[in-house]
Amino acid sequence: MTAQEIQHTLNNGDLDALEALRAEIPWFAPVHVSLAEKLQEDRDRSHPESLSKAAIYVGSPAVLYDLIVAPEVFAQSEAKEVAISGESDKSDEQLVVPETLKESEQEEEPVEESAEAHEAVSADDFDPLNKEIIVGAVSRTIEQEVQPESEEEITAEPEVPKDASKELDLSQENLSPFAAYLLRRSREVGFQEEEESKMESGTAAQADTMDAASLIDRFIAKEPKITPRKAEEYTTGDLAKKSLVEDENLVTETMAQIYAAQGKMEKARRAYRLLSLKYPEKSVYFAAQLKKLGKKTN
Image (tube, rainbow, N blue to C red; front, side, top):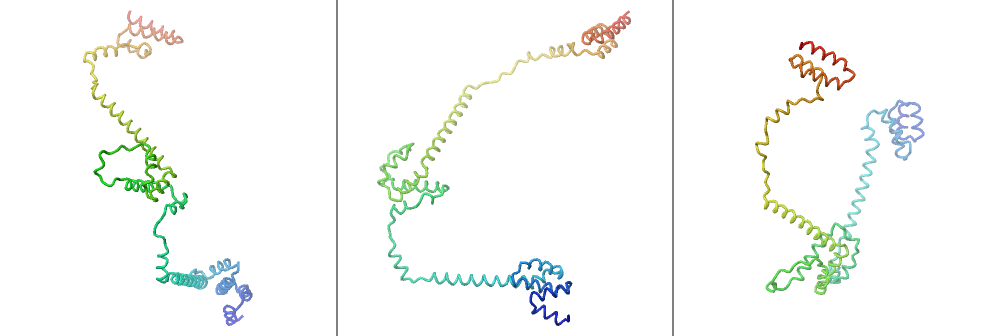
C-alpha cells in the first residue's frame, strides 16, 4: 500500500477500511487516532478502548485532546451559550409590561388587609425556629394597643399576672385583626406554656439562691472559731518513750545476735526465747544459742 492510499484512507476512509489498515500496520499511530475519532463520531461503544490504545501509540495526551476531545467540548459550550442567550431574550420580553396595565392592576388591588387573609396561612408555613419572632411581635403589638392614651392616669405599676392569657382574652375586643391573629397563632404553637414554664423555673432558681444566701448569713452571724489545742498536749517525751518500746512481733535472730555482741545478755536471751516460741521448728537451734550465751556470762 502506497503513502497516498494510506493518506486517503485516513482522511476519507470508513470504519471497515480503518480497521483493515490498523490490522495491516498496527504500529502506525495515525491510524489509531483516526479510528478513535471515527468511533467517537459514530458514538460506538468501543470508543473508550480505541482511545486508550491511541494514547499508548501517540505518547502525548495533549495531541489526543486537541484532535478528539477539544472539538466536542467546544461544540457543547457553544450550544449552552446559545440556549442561555435564548432564555435571556425570552425573559427580557416577558419583563416588558405596559405602564397602563400596571396602573390598572394597582387600582384593582384591595387596600385593606383583613384577618381572614392571615388565617389562610397554614400552620405548616411557620418554622418552630421563628417562635421567638412571633412572641416578640405579639408582645409589642399588644403593649402598643393596650397602653392608655395618657401616662398621667397610671398611678401605680400593676403586677404581672401569672396567667397572662386570661387578661389577653378579655382585651381581644380592643385589638386589631392582625394583633388578634398573632395572639391566636402564639397559642397554637404553645408559646404561652413555654413562657409560664420559664417563669416557674426562674422562680425556683431564685428561691434556691435566697436559701444559699440566708445560710451564708447565718454562718457569718454565728462566727464559729476553730480553737487550737494547748501546747501541753504535745509532749515530746511521750513520743520518745513510745519509740523505744520494743515490739515482740518484730524480733529477729539478727537482733538477738546484736544484743549479744553489745553485751545485753538479758535482751539477747529474751529474744531467743521469743524466737523459739515464734518458730517452734527451730526451737532446738535457739536453745543451743541460749546455752552459748550462758557459757559467755560464766
